[in-house]
Length: 414
Image 1 (cartoon, rainbow, N blue to C red):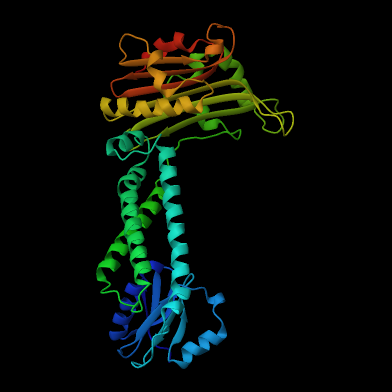
Image 2: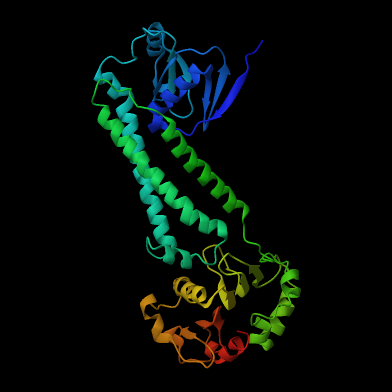
């Protein structure tokens, strides 16, 4: 008859192997004997309690010869294959000698593997810092700057930023401290001692479970987009009746009449133009109302080496924040991002030079491609940033109309 088994959560990493050894020995004294070791879990066989010793080697199975395994077995140590690049040995013989009797053999099995993992952890940390720096326009430890720059993100993203990242950072630091401690002890013959395991168990378990929950939450908490159609099915976008944003049909009625017919008769495989027409609605914890309309009409490339030629581009974004403070702070980061994404060569620092006064608005700025600024008949890239109270509107336009001349149209809806 097969013995009963139990599955237990295992939050220990390779660097925590000595704490895990103590944990496994503690389970053995309760009658739970390790059967197999998997990622984040261990399966135990329920048996009689016993004083069993465990030793975990951070070494690949494929790099261990049968001769070595036979040597361990002859000394009373039996192998259990662990997850990843580790092997777990156990013995019930209280007189069985330690697997390694000299410092040199310890170095072979521990030091090389641990140093490799240490370097990998440093690289991961550096890459994480670089990614954060890129995403928030320069690395910052200011909670308020992180909060306002992420105001349009779902609540799960804010939780990941303010809970997940600090936890991951603390976990990384304690991980590296443990590495350094082990590498320092590696020079000594008495290499197997690590007092206790409970604190390490609960710290690791809290970090891992919290990060897993936050990651799953961020995956489930996807943006609630009403319609995002760039594949030819524009039905929902055309039916949208919202009056909060200045639709392209209001911005340029004459051109819209032509474009609308193209949209209604659009056949992706047989048209001489590519069309994107989207209406998106979403919300976040700090900005409960976000609406976007995007229209792009372009000429397809003649061959694979050519790029599409944009004939018309119109993108309006409405943000209604919880307060004017949120709208004002979010605008600072959003305008910088919008400027970087555009083809207009203007530095972020000189953005305020393009401000102008407009009655009823708290902020107004107009930026245009300077090479074509005086040619009102030419198509040119233009940006418009407007804010009134808790409402912030950002417009990006490529076409012949002077975007600044339409400020009254946008201000009337704010």
